[in-house]
Length: 480
Image (cartoon, rainbow, N blue to C red):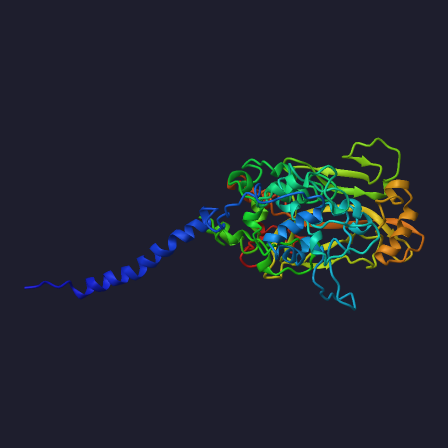
């Protein structure tokens, strides 16, 4: 006689199967998202050596590009559709202008070297194109001027020189034979040295990241990440955009911690509650410019004097500087976009700081989080009659760096920028914010409760919109 299991036992087994099988299937991926930084990183393709593929002679950089296009016919067109080529955003509308505007290095100013329109000789060292000429319109449709080598050649074999061209003495055939997938060396040549030198601009990107330790950057040092592991590319469109050159950036175009990590990755739910209003970077990047100093103040008004020139405190061509290192960021609400970006010709109040860019978000914005920034302050030239910031011509035979004549530099710029110059100028204070997203520290170095709460808090709670420290009045981070 057969014996049958009790109905209740069969039901229990079915119930447990319904619960346990999905956990068994999905739990490993969830755990990986938290603990394995490689789980969501695409496998790097095996690169094909070009040493025996590229044939010479290659006498001009355009010949190099043509050799690349013989096998990669769409590559140049792809590059020409990116902001690495255009240096300009798509047109968009802003409330204070009647016509759509664009933002980018090609047509707007910052508070570092002021603008590329005044210094094509040096600024274009970081442009992905060849053949710039002073005072001439650049042909953005010429595919043969796309510089494939700047991103793909071994940096020991290739370097950029003036007006975007290869540096003198470069063996173009050897450089072309060395091409590979981009490394930190390729990206760093421009992004580590932006603004005029190592670490000048960003505060979280500098030459210490070529060979970082884990304590400097847990991804690049601890896990040997390349830039392209996070800033992934499709058709040369590289994920991750900078708000200095855009007003609004779609979330899918950005790199986010949650691309690889869980949204609530901590064992302690009290910490997970913070992630709804505090960016991961706020706690995990406790300091910027950890190894190499970064510029925090630039005074153009003192340029042109015959003072001791030591690069870090004074340069005759640029004025006085202040550098800092291993310091806490500035904290603001940030939803990934800008509420304002100074546009060439916007009027200013010279008695108040002028924002070159202003991160969007506040305590009432459900999409904003408290985020770390580097704040760079400058004194830069403006027209005292028209009350707008001026872009001088600095480079070239008759630029400011040749004759140290501001008046002449502003008159030269009229034809380039289209801005009238009244003949009278002064210097006004400007502020510019740079989001801090690199130099992520190991979790052991993350901020602790008393770094933000209590008498030694690094946060200005009232400036952030709170009545005071939430620990003192019972506020919660998961409910602004």
